[in-house]
Length: 121
Image 1 (cartoon, rainbow, N blue to C red):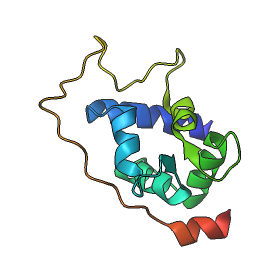
Image 2 (tube, rainbow, N blue to C red; image 1 turned 120 degrees about the horizontal axis):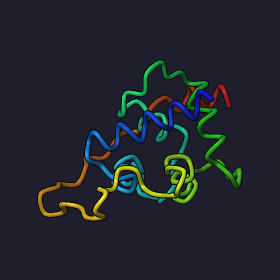
Image 3 (cartoon, one colour; image 1 turned 90 degrees about the vertical axis):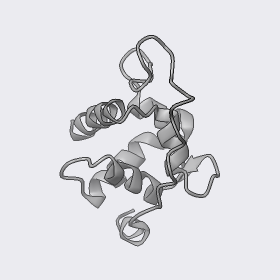
């Protein structure tokens, strides 16, 4: 239940920042390997200012998203957590367009809490 509430918060936070799930994924994938590590996910959730976030919450979120249990979150796994019930990207404008000319790429978000998460996992 807590992960569901946090996922809803994330969807709203992405919308309020006018950032698509893909743009956020690229920004948080600090090493550019097209996968998210636990510390990259932690940094992402902190960047979105998820309230009352604990390292244990991050581990729970990570384990929920890592469907194939390979220790990394691929984009499809990431989207399965943050999509709405209809499988849509909640940050995508309703008309399906993005103002790509006016929008600059998000800066990379540095990983956070690797040692702390490793101790929990």
